[in-house]
Length: 272
View 1 (cartoon, rainbow, N blue to C red):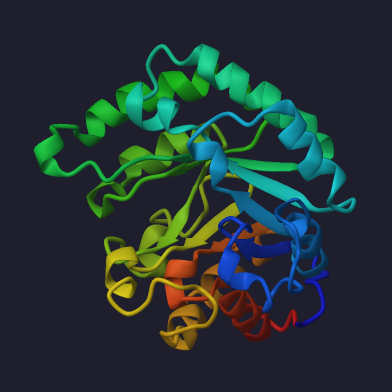
View 2 (view 1 turned 180 degrees about the vertical axis):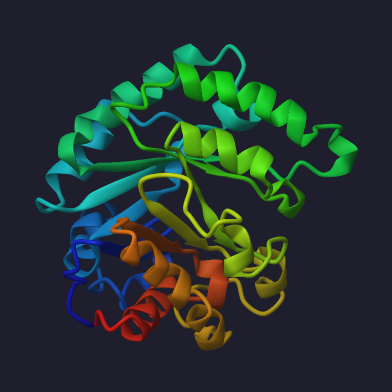
């Protein structure tokens, strides 16, 4: 393993940390599940919590995350699907409050909050206008002075000024995605080349269905992603030129082994 990324501006990690296939590779053999985050935090400076998408964590669970990681480590957290999918931003103030109250126990270790939305295909009947009619009031009511919210959409047709402008006005960042449904990096930035919020948030997701035809274990890469990661370097450097902190997270479905891709990206950025 390489040394932990020491850059104060660039934090790179993975989407979740509790992957059994990493034991014996990223983690020492026999590591109990409660200690995985401790070993993870010796290598990385941030992680994206996937579990919060499915349920609000218990206070004791959040306390464990906080107490088993060093000072300076940051957790990004996915908002519960109850908010983004089931209630679709309507009448979900109670759910948002419960979620933020739980995550607040992380204290200074809490990083961005990701609002991950589904791909609103045409057959769903959800238009960009309908989406914004719900998103804007939700963001206006959210405690944006206390928390950093990030919005992710998976419809490339929605990457227009109609979305960029309200996010920019509210200083909410748009998540940039490496995903088969989305365009390559430069096209995901606002037309004037500016990011919409106070930080850059990048997710390397890959093709879940495509890679699972090759492998369903996540202990080694099965796809060479060097050229794909190279294409993201200019976007990351553009964020750094604007003094924006960068949060980047790689999913196992990207190449088959997310820690390998983080190390590769660190090398491309001169951080390893």
